[in-house]
Length: 226
Image 1 (spheres, rainbow, N blue to C red):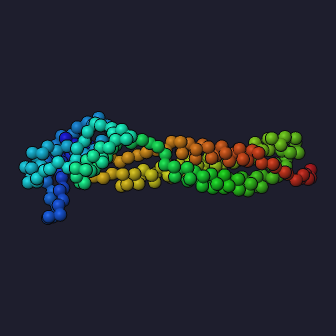
Image 2 (image 1 turned 180 degrees about the vertical axis):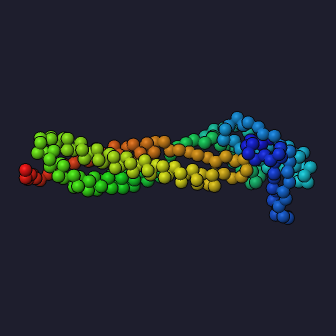
Image 3 (image 1 turned 90 degrees about the vertical axis):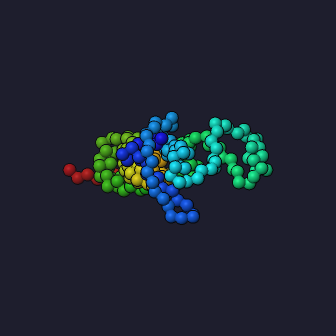
């Protein structure tokens, strides 16, 4: 039974068996697709008779059990007393928990995004000094000027975050398959750190806009000749 129909060719599954005693052997076995209980399940199940029929010997190497050891379980130590060749591993399933290192990258992104946004906003505000002076001359309140600068900061930071998100998504998806698949029938693992992305794409532009909003703006009085 194969849990990935894409691995089948004309109702057969191509296998490759390697050994230190000789060159690798390739052979085809009849197979049927099966739907796993877990959508991330890959691989295949082979009956022992089919493997022995191909000329290979079989031996028990791994035992799977639906058992969760307790926190103070001595199962591993007890088995080690019998033989050192036995190891125990526990798997509780994949959990999409952001890596703590991501928050370090978030701190670096905070400095770059806010600093770059404020610099770009100051340059844009410098280009708009004549317009801003005109707004002040006709009675625009200071809060309107700050709101204008904050809107520029929000636009600059938001546009940069969206472009970075699209570029990072394409790169991440392209690297996912070669880095997370381990053979035919093994699906790629795609884990999206939603809290981290929300903090970068939404939180940083809002923070940059808030920083620009509280910035004090001083405009020199401009003389207009009519």
